[in-house]
Length: 203
Image (cartoon, rainbow, N blue to C red):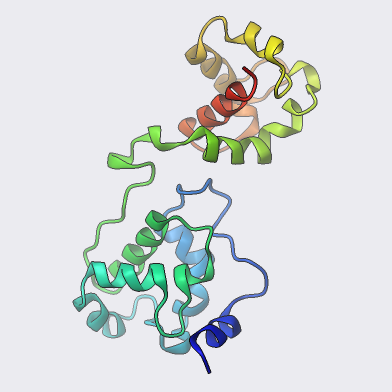
C-alpha cells in the first residue's frame, strides 16, 4: 500500500478541526486532543504513544527540527499535519512539543499569539473574521437590537468618534442589549480583532 492509501485509511471520517479557537491560537494540548490523539493516543500504525517515554526517546534523540519536519510534512503512515491542513505551522510545533514533553523531552512550545505570547498577533482579517462569522454575525449582520450593521459606514462612523480604544472598551463591558464581548468567551485581543474586522469592512 502507498503512503497516501494508508493515510486515507487512518483518516477520521470528515475533516478534523483542532478546536473552535481562532486559527493560530490553539495550544499543543488542544491540537493533540482534537487531532493527534487518534493515532498517538493508542500508538496506532507504529506512532509513538502519548506519555510512553520508551517509544518517544529514540525520536526525541533525533532532535526538535527532525520531529517538526516529520509532523509538518508527514512521515510513514502519518499524513502532513496529522491530516488537518487547517493547522498553522506553529500549532503543529506546539503539538510536537506537548507530546514530546509528555515523553520526556524539554521542548518549548511556540507561544500562542507570537513572541512572548504577545496578543497583538490576533490578525483582524483572519482571527477577527472567524470570530465575527461565528459570534458577532448574529446581531451585526442585520443590525439586530440597534447594533451597527456590518458594512454600514454611517452607523460605524458615528460610533468611532471617541476612538477605537473607547469602542473596544465599551463593547468589552457590554452596552444596551449587547452582552460583554457580545457573548464571546475568548481573549480580549481576539475580541478586539473582531471589532477591527467589522470596522475595516465598514469604512
